Image (cartoon, rainbow, N blue to C red; front, side, top):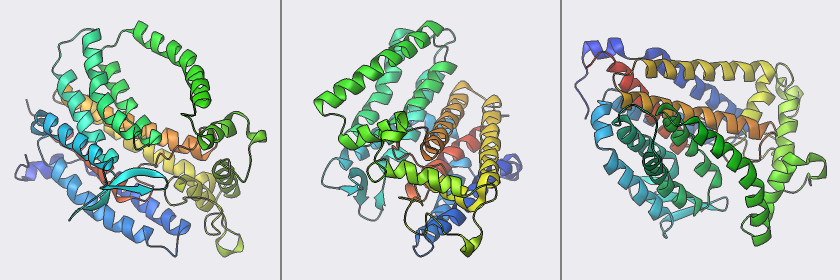
Length: 372
């Protein structure tokens, strides 16, 4: 699958996208250090970046078409890993058994990596179909591809990670010609069923008390208990507001993150730490960097030599965009806290490695834009 690197490959390689991704991670390392200066999270993130760059290069210089052809194999391996999480090999972190510890490999989060085989499976199936609107049978196959990993992730349980899979299918459906009436029906059904499902979940106990409070703090902030499950959201908003225009001034101002008021400052709430240390200007600069990175990914989709390559890029772009939206919305108090990391910024080897592998596929597609 890995081709010999030629001079032409280095010329066609998307260096700007690579530099942008590395720059965002480097900025994230700085913020991780600001959040937890006495811990080793920032140094581990640097090591993780090095490993991620190796994997990124391997995927980027490989022929994505051969990998897409082997998508069922990778998809099957992904499902096996998710099943192993539910066995004694699974490791519980913060109340969720979402991690797996294997000999020689160590501890990692399979749900971060399985998104990639899901994208490849969707691209393989929908990339081979003929033009025209999607049929019900085709849509059901797409739902089935998504349902298996999502169902296993919900059993961990990790609802936040499960949610990040749905944009992958939504983007593929949209680009494959889903009929507008199906979209309208889905939206209307969601608006009707979501409140009903929430009410049933509360009555049956399927939605736990802390989950209810995290939703209620968004709907009715004044009634929320600032020392209960609303604590995360309230502290995050205080941290963001404290940064002002340019951020706090060194040791002259106290830090919410360093004083341990802000929970999980190096992972879920790294954007709040960014706001505190660099202010509004720093946050806007970060969001502009994301916008430029995403625009580069979309540009690659326009240059894709085949439909499967285009779907791979756009599904990856949609997934990254959704995670940015969810994390920033969570930090600003517009969305409930569900544990979605900020791509390339949040600490964690699994997250940074899977994101770089995904971007590596984009690079691979763009490098073969002149190949028939």
